[in-house]
Length: 223
Image (cartoon, rainbow, N blue to C red):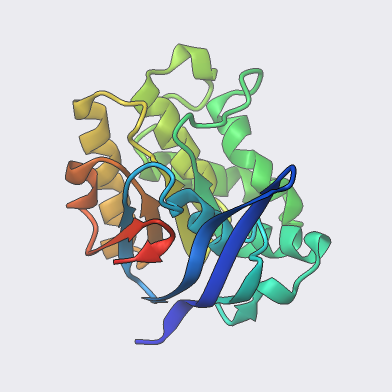
């Protein structure tokens, strides 16, 4: 199976005044298409930084990253924004839903960038909300939903554009154990039944156990 993500000898440092803070140190990583990868490690090990680089949110200091056949390290910010909209679905710890929009409207947001007709867009929103088990909550606002339901809305939004890769940053970090189990079961289905490649950062060993592969970072290096 071909690699959908290729990270090659990547370094990342941040400038804080006169101080250079290294985060990633010559890191290389291949992720085959269809893999469910959990990235683990202590705080400050570079997990979220690596996730952001793969997703095209940040730029490496050196090295190259190729995702879904695109050398993302060579794209401008505007090109990256367009590429992310087409290829990457994002799931965050705190959901990042718009509080003034219903579940339906939140999921529809990324589809407004695709040029879909309104009829097709609305059908796609209904399809993914049904997939995550929230077809009866589509007219509810985020404050009318539990944490687990809000995260399912966020997952529906992430998959609405049928992205090639899903990146999840601590997707169960704000949930109770029962809700966390539901979210991990859903992510497992997206991987096993729909073939989605998932790269997940987590501190939770039980969440990591749901992935097919676990990798550990420490001080900017993969162990």
